[in-house]
Length: 375
Ligand code: GMT
Image (tube, rainbow, N blue to C red; front, side, top):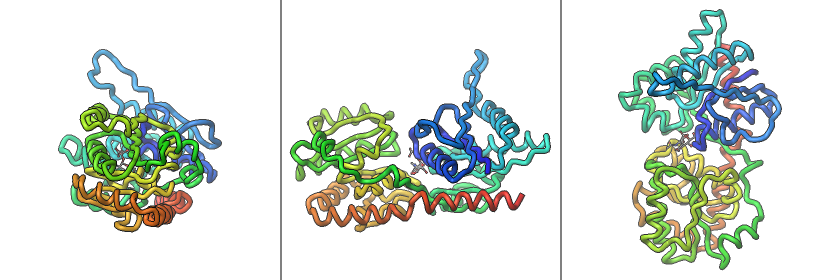
């Protein structure tokens, strides 16, 4: 098949999933065309069957806002027409679903039929999408899609509650590439981070409000009173400066390292003992899954789809959003007992296996075939 993929090319989970999906499809022999405004963060190196088309957003003094949607719709019409795409898969409803609809209508006038699939990732529904600023177009885009997928049961329900949805929504969860995410022997690396064998706790995110990154530091403060430990803060975003301030105020700086955006996050996960994810909202929690694939147990909030990934008392613990004390207690429980740590670590890996790319990718291929058959 010739498949077009549209996504946000940043470090966010939706862009990661879209890129990894495209690369997986290309390895399976499909021709994949990424159409994005910047090269996706995970699209590095050369890959057979993979093509990249940059959306050129022309500015003009009259435009207070660059018309990204118009540029994307135009680019899509060219790529679909000249590369003879069979199907288009857009990730993140805003604005990609309605832009795909627009491109489809333009091409229809030329006798070209392009079905499109929309994958809902979370913030497009739970945070921004249901605001009246966007909701009419989000509803329209979802209902006009030839198929709609959501990354968790929780997100599917949230979508059905928040919008007037007439289209069926199929759940296809986030996935993990075990060729990349696995525990590797990196003792030298571990020694550098934790020279006197401290426990290594890790958090990765885009440091947005929804991630409650400040909680990570308060939780760590409580853990480190009981257990010699180091905290790795991976990623960057609006709340990073406040987090660094909290470290200074609470005298945590010697044990907390802010690493900024990292490409090889798997290498850091591979030496970690515990992953913290206190998010306010999380439709799935891809970062937690990445940790689990590297045998790292997770202490998280119970928001959104997290209970579908992190199993209470098995792969880690789920606590109420904002319950810093409980999250710290649960972390100490795991980290202070080597047997328990090993058991949770093995369970985390086993659970992550359920989301192996090898199992999930055929679900998308199957969906593409079904959509094409119905045309
Ligand atoms: O979590 C983020 O801030 C990034 C966001 C995105 O839209 O790119 O991630 C969302 O999609 C991921 C991939 O499907 C999910 O694993 C994340 O849980 C989801 N984030 C939220 O719901 C906050």
